[in-house]
Image 1 (cartoon, helix red, strand yellow):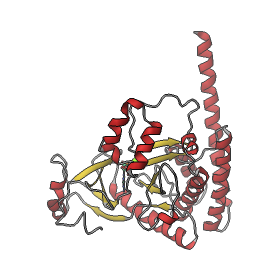
Image 2 (cartoon, rainbow, N blue to C red):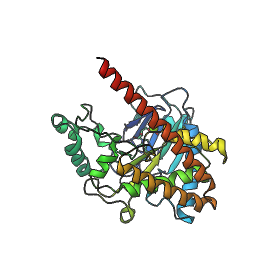
Image 3 (cartoon, rainbow, N blue to C red):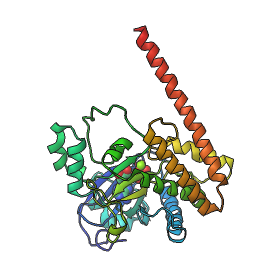
Image 4 (cartoon, rainbow, N blue to C red):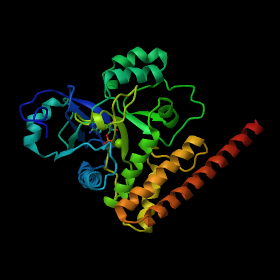
Length: 336
Ligand SMILES: Nc1ncnc2c1ncn2[C@@H]1O[C@H](COP(=O)(O)OP(=O)(O)O)[C@@H](O)[C@H]1O
Ligand SMILES: [Mg+2]
């Protein structure tokens, strides 16, 4: 753990930097490398203890695959630091006052903080994507300083004309056509994601359910081996959020479980069911790389092929459902 921000004598207040179903995420209110604290103060069925165990397993798999197998370069995971129990009275006695008064001790997972994008990148994103009337507000809002980008390679909006009035830079999704339009290396992101799920499935034996990817700055010392972009600056892909990840067996049942999670997840991965030329190409890049990295991990591509076949089948079902919905839409229009 960092000796500067979580030690017993530090007094910097904690500020909320994120929120999910599991609870709220906090960090010392100051710039620079720090720890993040995920508090178990959200939905009753979520557990940061489970998050912690899965995080450790996946971090170990990722280190092994990156070091020994040369996979998923340019992917980072926040370093796991400590799981604090709500009844750890000594830890809370020394730190409770750094949370706002209504926040009681609870189970809390401490990991490395993923640092937000720098101001110059944030300002450029606001100029590109935020409605003009909100730009000045967002540029000066504290909350929007905690800016991480969610790269949605599996989503595109055909007529992207009306940006949402509820613009925020927190967990800002960028859709595949926006990423592409900014000249970001979507093929390379797809390759890293393919390596990552191959590692999560075959090495960590998990279904990768509900994990998140964000684009964020590299750690100090990683700048040379990072993605470069005029808008975002140097960045890496980061993987986070493991509390919904489940164990799988390496057989048909495990593959079914992982394939369903693939489509249930936020649309980070390229999808097999889109007609746009770029999306088809991206699916090719992703699936080819998935076969390669799976072979590196397992010695052959047998399970990876079964997985891809299943993803393509489920994709086809989704496409058919979309077409059916469109047909109903058309009929309703004609009936009016
Ligand atoms: N280590 C971290 N560094 C920076 N931000 C984080 C970190 N962990 C979580 N966050 C932020 O908090 C949000 C919620 O955390 P997450 O782990 O996804 O919780 P949940 O399981 O409730 O979805 C994330 O989407 C992200 O924006
Ligand atoms: Mg989450």
